[in-house]
Image (cartoon, rainbow, N blue to C red; front, side, top):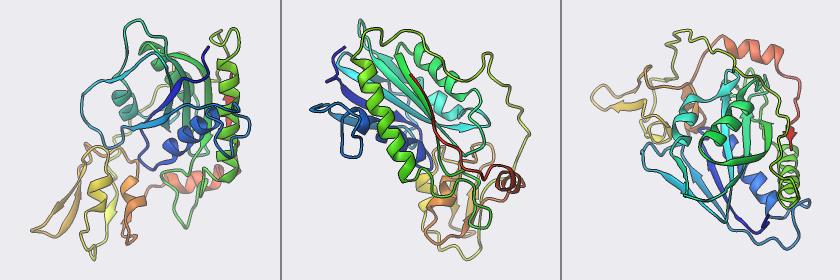
Length: 277
């Protein structure tokens, strides 16, 4: 296999953790600084297709000469449904064989069946996944008072991601690169029970209405009522990713859920990335 394939990162990453990990893996595959296990002398071009704010239906075509790195967040042990919808836009050019690395990022609880699900999705799209990794990012529900995986992915996580990228590059250049390999997870995937949760992020009354929360919302759930001078959130569109909370420059956007306390109490011990080749 030609190790000089260009690398295309395709991600859905509302709070930027999944993109950060996927790009670190790509850097490791390319032998970038910090990814010392990558191939010496590699000269791939790396591009990122971030689908977080892209709500179009236009196809994303990948073809010969590309290796794809997919990056998505985990919601309730599964791939975020909005990520699945957007990744389905990927189309493999006729006759092309496109290697893929699949990565998921979860908030220090568990990724359960998400990695297997993303692998299966990649196959259904015509990609040829040969490596997989589950990494940790700060949980969307984390707060300063009750942090959950605060600050992750951190320096150690990014180093692990780059090392994994180097291992991916070496595997891709070896005989039998596409032989079946084990990934932790179950088929059929766990059933996600929808609780009918209508709780959405809220904005304090003294919000200056800068509109940053509107700009970063992946689904268009947030809007501003200028007459009422209020930030509105549509519960039917909100996916509780908390991108708006993270992006609020004044810290006036909050999301309150009892699950935060549970996560803080039971999921604070550091978990390490898990990779499969």
